[in-house]
Image (cartoon, rainbow, N blue to C red; front, side):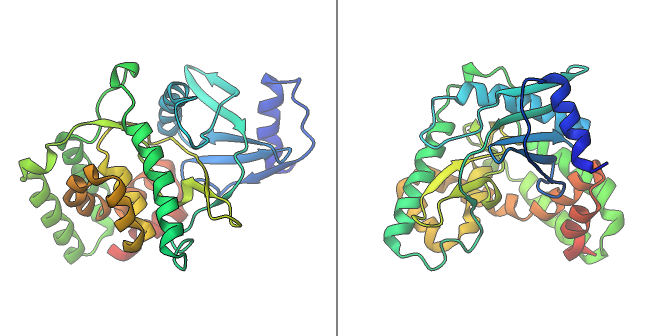
Length: 286
């Protein structure tokens, strides 16, 4: 039995009226979820772990609040199934476009970069400006949250790391956690994983066509979004900050957050039993 069949059976058990003519399973298509394309028109995501399912439950709440309030298309879940109080899967119409890569706009002229930056900044302003009283969610990414991540790094990842790599991470975290000014920011709704793999574009026009995967979204630090989008390079970020100067206050936190990306990937992969992503994240530290 092809592996995709087990996921298709889950969908058919809940939505027997859905006619499935074709499917494509991307086992490695998502760090946190297994992705299944149905009829080249629908996307279904199945969480890899209970922790991911908990994040998906929050994601569904946030997507419901954001529907109709963003200029760029976002997932519109029309299929979802819950088991024991947690999502077993969610499904939504496919948003057209290809995944933006770090070099997608490397050769684009300034006019294109400015237009793309305007689309991205417009979207972030809409998300960041969401009234927090519309969301019954706790705040993430406080100093205490980062202190907890630091403890997890020490407890779970340091055993895999070189001594000098441990010392470097320790110095970075100790400096950040002891800098009270670094944590003085206004919490906002942020995407949380606003990197190149979650932004779609039209390769013909180079226009952004949508934003996907709100699994890390929540109320927290907008520096998370700035840090992720900065992978598009310095030329792009000049236009970004010109259009969104309020985010210049995040620069120091962005440097700190970006320094933790690989270890965060390794930590979450260790949690979810994803050996490939763990190896990729921990590689530079071993």
